[in-house]
Image (cartoon, rainbow, N blue to C red):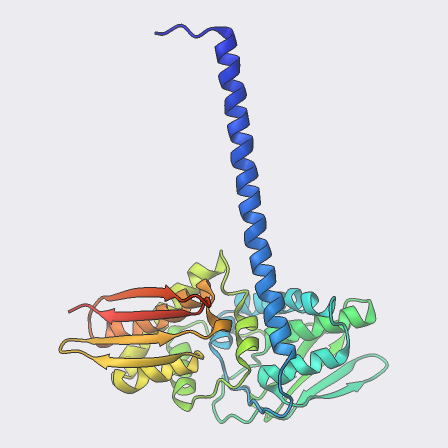
Length: 329
């Protein structure tokens, strides 16, 4: 064994410590950059949401985020808490109630009616008209958003519960805000792929995802981060596969699915299988969303054509993405 002098050993230890510290600093710097980029995206989306044209009408149906958030009671709780956290990001910078009204307008709730009382407040939207019903109240993310705005505005913790929902048995949505509300009293996820797939099929066919594109991206942000992203991608893939058992006409359904998720697409029929070209707008060119949406499309096409799918993604100079999903011959 080679003899190493004490001075050399201490020098190596010093270098090792220095290397470890340098690696740690680089890791911390990388994390800081990632957090900065994420925050910049969130703030950009918030400003895009608030720049909504008030003359433009959105009628909220059930978006992909609603299907995922309502899969289990645990996901509903996460949606509420995430809505509160992201709402704080907005409320701390733009604290007025009119900001909340603009956000709900972008979310597809239309012009909301706000009724303040001594012990509570009621916020009502009558703009949602959908014949397709989930069977229980659905808007936990928006309940959390409203809660954060009310709490910031009143400098006291205010909870919000959706008491009536257009996706349940009502023809309108109504939220009640007070310190004593229990937002989780009526949680009921459908917890099975069949129900979720039926909703996805009905809503994608009806093209009812009516909300502004930036708001759709904003409300998806909690799903597009780990540790949730990996599970959401698996769920999306399974939903796509199950949808392939219900609707085998990919020439129509693949494009409808893409459109439902806010994406332009073109389907090319090959001698064996298909090639789907998908364009992502700037607000949806988020790595996690590309993973999520392409998993849904990949699951669908792989089941219809009983083939593995190859995915390629490319970004242009403006940062928007094109994705190619192609079945293997």
